[in-house]
Image (cartoon, rainbow, N blue to C red; front, top):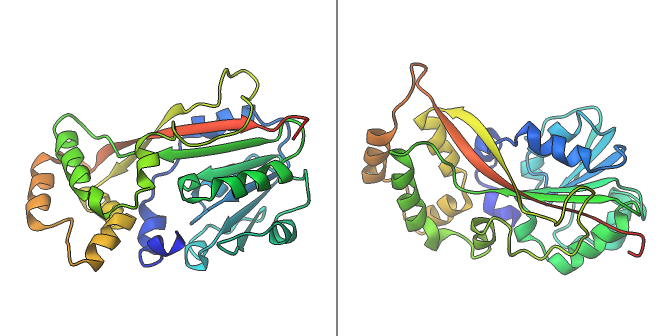
Length: 263
């Protein structure tokens, strides 16, 4: 999985959408203690940075050292590069002992994992009872009534270059296995919808597209997704404000649950 983002790690860190504060406020409100977070698949640290403003310590792990190079360095965040097949012994060495973590987070990465192995690790390391796991993804951006149909067509035509697991994201994590109890105040584990907004120029938006794993895969096959025809359509529909930017909205879908006494 890490190799999909290796060549465009810098673009990925600069253009990957942020996550709304409401998302983190919701997660924090469901976590009884705020001592330690394990942010799995942290990439370039977007989620870890936000979590570090509330939790005493955050450990961000990723299988790509290249991604971690672009992660913000804060005093209460420790980054660790882990093996693609993380063992229990490596988990204990780099993250913590059994029942030691208050919150496990996974931002835009759960669909890549071996769920059986990962969930066993989560249930082992979360504090019992009521340690929380929160996993979320964002789907394709929304801009306005003129641009969105053009972009949806472009995205549909890019589908052959995406990994099949991308379909789990398109399904808003509804179909993903999630064997945890509902957190207090919720009837189920979601998905719960949030919305993230970012001001972007067309050039920045296209840089975001170039950070896609599908863009890199297509390029290696000799296919230019952002060809002249596509760019002409984009420019025609992209109506910028006086600052040369548009508001881009990313729908974010959260699955959240907790471990109980019996785990």
